[in-house]
Length: 209
Image (cartoon, rainbow, N blue to C red; front, side, top):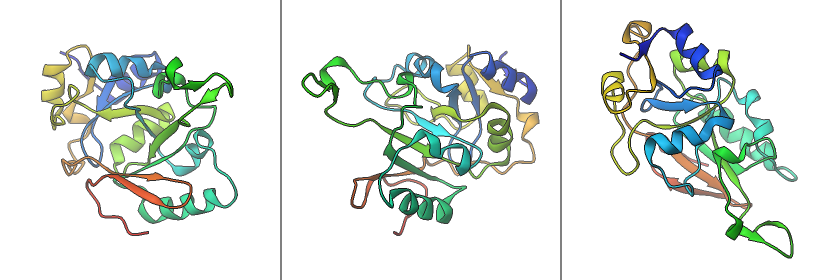
C-alpha cells in the first residue's frame, strides 16, 4: 500500500522519492528536477523525451527558461491568458534546468563550438488544480510527466497508478475527495520557434495566439 497523506507525499518528494498526484489534466508522476532519472526509469522512457516542469505559479518558473529581446514578453502574455491551465510551453532552457530533466548526449554537441547542435528546451506549466498547486507550493517546481509506461495511455486514477507503480508514493483519495477530477486528456503542448508558436501536441485546450 503506497497511498499516503499529503504531508507524507510532500516529505517523500523532498527526500528524493518518486510521487504521483492528480492534476487538471491527467495524474502526474513527479520528482525533484534533479531526480528526473527516477521518472525515466519508472516509465521506461526514452532519454530524448524531455520532462515537463510544473510549478504552482508562473513567477516560480521563468528562471528555468532563457529568452532574448521581447521573447519573455511574448511568452508571459500567452501564460497569462492560459495559466493556470492545460497548456505546456516549450521554451529555451536556462542553465538552471538539471541535465536529469532533459538529457543531451555527447552526439548532440558540436565539438568546434562546444555547445549543443540543438539547443535544450524545457516544457513548463502551471496546473489549474487546487491539490496540485497545494503540493507544488510546498515542494517548489517538480519534474513531471503522465503516469504510465512509455507508449501506453495515461493512467487515470490513483488506484491504477498504485497497481502499475507500487514503489511510487501516490496521494490517498481522501486527500482530494472534494477536488474535481482531471479532464483525462494531456495538456496541449506548444513550442516557441524564435518567430512564432508551433503546436507539438493538440491536447485538452485549443490555443489562439
